[in-house]
Image (cartoon, rainbow, N blue to C red):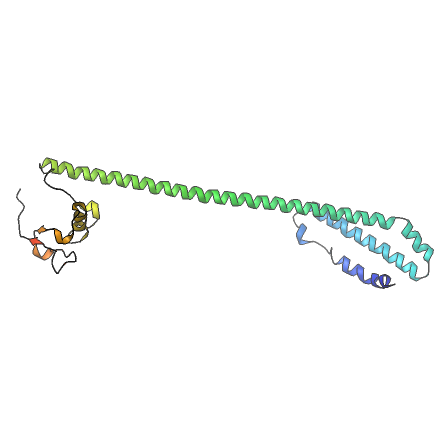
Length: 219
């Protein structure tokens, strides 16, 4: 009797599962048609239950049993199960396809990122090679100028602006010379051409052990 008394409330709950257009099947006409068929099958099954219950309540037990024994309800339930199974399989297939598409998109994105990074590294490497080549060319020009002057064996180290990117009175060129000579500022003498441009390498107000002389270039 509990099941019979609860039956009139069940149709409302079941019908709420398949009302009108459903967001999960929008854009999929095949699934939308299956959902329509499922909605109709559920309605038919509920109508069959309503009729059976109504006859039983009226005392027409024979009529109620006749409906049950006709297997019409079983046919409807088989159809409902088949539609639910088919729809579930289709949804799982669609989900798998979307996951494959997402993985493909992720692969393409990773490939583009990796390719872009590789290209950037290649460009940086090419720029470094070109810069090094240009630097060596300028160094060769300096050496050739020294050779033209017959001074190629006079100096242990030759530092130009290209070596440090700084000019006098910056410290970088002088420190680069010290590095080439493997000496400290306190062990070196700098002979300059202008007292006001003495370079402080950290050993005093003037250059460390500097000998500063005014001089002229003899050409």
